[in-house]
Image 1 (tube, protein in one colour):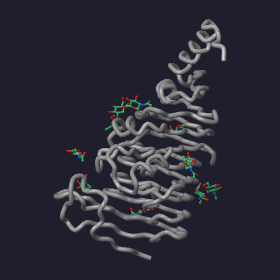
Image 2 (image 1 turned 90 degrees about the horizontal axis):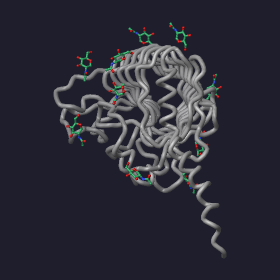
Image 3 (image 1 turned 180 degrees about the vertical axis):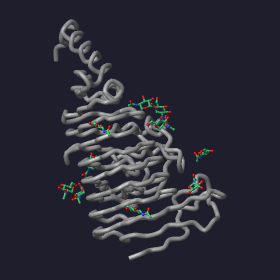
Image 4 (image 1 turned 90 degrees about the vertical axis):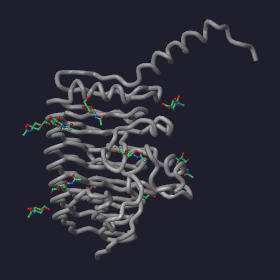
Length: 311
Ligand SMILES: *[C@@H]1O[C@H](CO)[C@@H](O)[C@H](O)[C@H]1NC(C)=O
Ligand SMILES: *[C@@H]1O[C@H](CO)[C@@H](O)[C@H](O)[C@H]1NC(C)=O
Ligand SMILES: *[C@@H]1O[C@H](CO)[C@@H](O)[C@H](O)[C@H]1NC(C)=O
Ligand SMILES: *[C@@H]1O[C@H](CO)[C@@H](O)[C@H](O)[C@H]1NC(C)=O
Ligand SMILES: *[C@@H]1O[C@H](CO)[C@@H](O)[C@H](O)[C@H]1NC(C)=O
Ligand SMILES: *[C@@H]1O[C@H](CO)[C@@H](O)[C@H](O)[C@H]1NC(C)=O
Ligand SMILES: *[C@@H]1O[C@H](CO)[C@@H](O)[C@H](O)[C@H]1NC(C)=O
Ligand SMILES: *[C@@H]1O[C@H](CO)[C@@H](O)[C@H](O)[C@H]1NC(C)=O
Ligand SMILES: *[C@@H]1O[C@H](CO)[C@@H](O)[C@H](O)[C@H]1NC(C)=O
Ligand SMILES: *[C@@H]1O[C@H](CO)[C@@H](O)[C@H](O)[C@H]1NC(C)=O
């Protein structure tokens, strides 16, 4: 085969480097930021962060392209009066080395998250189609059924958030727990679809649907959860939690706890209501997880020496 003249190669290579360096782009008009995905599958996270910076207070952020690649961690906190509208898929990257070395500390059980979101009066609408895809198969195969691997990230943490509404979002193949809600008050999450299903012989272990902690007045309405662990779990200092009209496929159902895992730390769970919940092939409909007062390891996490099952 004849080698093409060098000059013909230089131009396309230069163009592709230019695109790789820039990832997605933001179109900013008034208080609306529209994020356009890169067309070379490079990291769209910097553009998404820029959109939250430009329009995260009193604006709207539109993610309407089919596919966004998220190769780096995202911290979008301090938001206010913002609408986030997602009709495409956000697909998390496969660099396990990167994710294990990065992510934001949850501040509980040494866990980290790939995306931390927070603020006051957020409306996040997925219209039943907007999807967060954690590329979790990679993690299920990598962890080989080990429950807790340091740095395996939670897909989304809602932290330090008040008076907000998450609606119609899909979460598939979560890396680890799908969601955690911490230091948060008055949030409604409805019409949420979660499905983490392994396609290999390795289980989708510890893919909880959602965990709450240090949070008050959180409502989960019309969730469909398929996963390899707790479907919805209310942990330390969760109060006034309402769970309604949910369907769980497999998994462990509603978990109250664990609490009492840390020596000398007082934790409470109060006023949890679950109604009209259908658990199909789940190990429990609901259960209570507490510890015996003897801490095991640090962080004390992953072993349940004592469990109480109800219904
Ligand atoms: C909440 O934010 C929305 C914009 O997403 C705004 O229209 C609404 O007025 C805000 N609510 C309050 C109580 O400020
Ligand atoms: C994966 O991430 C690590 C750590 O950030 C980095 O050194 C490495 O170059 C990345 N690998 C690829 C294929 O991007
Ligand atoms: C997220 O970003 C905010 C604002 O820059 C910062 O104050 C906060 O410490 C960051 N959170 C984490 C967990 O790094
Ligand atoms: C967990 O975090 C604590 C601080 O919160 C730290 O002292 C401890 O070393 C961490 N443990 C592991 C296994 O990372
Ligand atoms: C929590 O959010 C409020 C505003 O929404 C901010 O003033 C405060 O600094 C945040 N706290 C932390 C610990 O990030
Ligand atoms: C419940 O949520 C699903 C998405 O998981 C949606 O298709 C369905 O319309 C919702 N049901 C109601 C009554 O809103
Ligand atoms: C969950 O995903 C698996 C694999 O894609 C699929 O077979 C299953 O039907 C899904 N479950 C629900 C309840 O949608
Ligand atoms: C399992 O899922 C991975 C990641 O999505 C995919 O690359 C692979 O083809 C799937 N394997 C089977 C047997 O479906
Ligand atoms: C218990 O939580 C429900 C919401 O599930 C709330 O309506 C009720 O007021 C709470 N009860 C008390 C005593 O706070
Ligand atoms: C949980 O809340 C109680 C007050 O109800 C408080 O005494 C305790 O310190 C909190 N626990 C943690 C770990 O913050």
